[in-house]
Amino acid sequence: MSAIPSGAAAIAEAVRAGRRSAGEILEESLRSIDRNNKNLNAFLHVDSEGAHRQAAALDAREKNQALGPLAGVPVAVKDNIATAGVPTTAASRMLETYRPPYDATVIERLRDAGAVLVGKTNLDEFSMGSSTENSAFGPTRNPWHPERVPGGSSGGSAAAVAAGLVPLALGSDTGGSIRQPASFCGVYGLLPTYGRVSRYGLIAFASSLDQIGGFSRDLDGLGLLYAAIAGHDPRDSTSAPRPVEPVDPERPMTGRVGLAASLLDWPGVEPRVAAAVREAAEGLAAGGATVVNIELPEPSTGIAAYYVLATAEASSNLARYDGVRYGLRVAAEGLESMYRATRSAGFGAEVQRRILLGTYALSAGYHDAYYGRAQRVRRWIRGRMDRVFDSVDLVLLPTAPTTAFRLGEKTADPLAMYLADAFTVTANLAGIPALNVPAGTDAEGLPVGVQLLAPAWREDRLLSAAGVLDRGRTAPLAWPEGAR
Amino acid sequence: MSISRADVEHVARLAHLDPDPGTLERMTRELGAILDYMARLADAEAEVEAEAGEGASAAEATVAAGPEATPLREDTMRPGLPPGRATEAAPNVAGDLFRVPPAIGGDAQGG
Image (cartoon, rainbow over all chains, first blue to last red; front, top):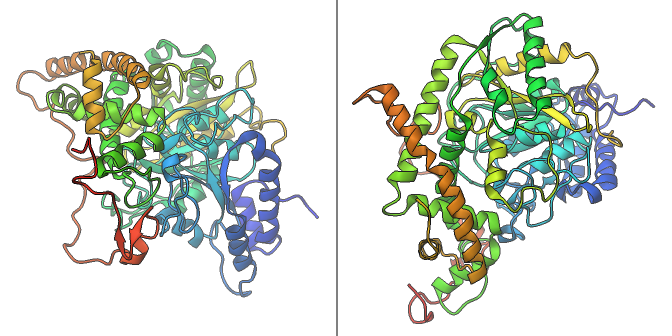
């Protein structure tokens, strides 16, 4: 019997053709999770029973019944995306026992596409963090190095895909939470355009910035995942009623790519990261693109605007966790004391820090100095990006200034942690799509990533350019030791 | 534009949080450092205004989250979760209702 294929496209094809059953593919994924999750802590909950039901339904189909594009593909889901009857904790004590009464739209769409949802992955509590160390249920470890973080906040999903536990995973990205862990774990990570993928059922952090996207080891799989979840959803009022341009990593790439060379000298950018971006520029040029130098907004301006806006929105969104309608309640004599006791016990340190910061930024006397100003700077950044895209088709940047840092290295300094998002927040502030493309490893064997940004709705350009880089690789992408 | 311990206490009250003295101390320090960093927004805004010229609209606030304005929905009734399902995840219920401690009279520090 031949080995079970590892890429999502190959799995779906084998299941559709009847060469492999969804059941045996699932067993292989569950065995990998069983072997590795104790060390990685990538999954918070494995829904073995639900996954077996889905696989059995696929395998019991009538002979002439067509199967979807993700038939039998095991997919992991970040634990801030609602799954009916299955724990959805946002890695918070506040929601430790919560089981949503409904599925997120992306969950329905994945099931319709034939995917088998195997479980829920670890994250920084309510997606607030860049290392997955802010999870109330312990940090996730990077499959490339056990003493390194996988990035965050979608660190569990990135680690699960890098370690080969699943070929695909969903994440969410508010300021880099898909792309930065994808970079640290050496996989593809796509942030779609704001409004492209329904956020119905996503536990809100900062609603004007949050977007669901995904992780894959290969581009074909990423394209299938994106196609399955993209498109209008009337249940999300920010979802765009417009057609989705088909993606094709095989399509040639002949446009203009903007490289902000000056940012490669930005403080804290590791030489290997800068070198990877330059190599990617050469790779795109060799593939037919014209690379030109561009100027982008100073990253520290974006970071400042982002952390004001994101925390302001978070302080409002997280007001709903009050011990009344769902989640934790800490008993107290009066209503006000119950609110305070519940929220102080249920939220971890980083979430409380961000709620305080956001409440301050919105409070009387400070609103215009922080929130109003950040909104104006956001508008300016968006305008700058529009102008950049008047002259180029894509922008090339580092994804993160560094490779994966050590567990505990930045936990004592919140601001240092925020700076890990220096190159990722621009896309969220502008509402545009962006992709982490794995670009080999550094001298310590840690993955390096480069980031592509495209104008709104042009995810197709990101995948085409990534296809050019993929075909130009001198060696195939490597995987961490022990990974399938 | 740094933040005082009294400011943090005030904001914590607004946010229904109850940090202990040690946490309050640490949060004041950390928030101070973060807000110092955010002071660069003022410089950025000044730069934006200078770039745009006096009276230009470049420094307007963002009005829509996405690249396009959010379309309006039909103003029609849609079904929501039935009461029994909406309350099933609640920590304390009475029938189909949420049960909470008294808002008046049960809480010495109530507000």
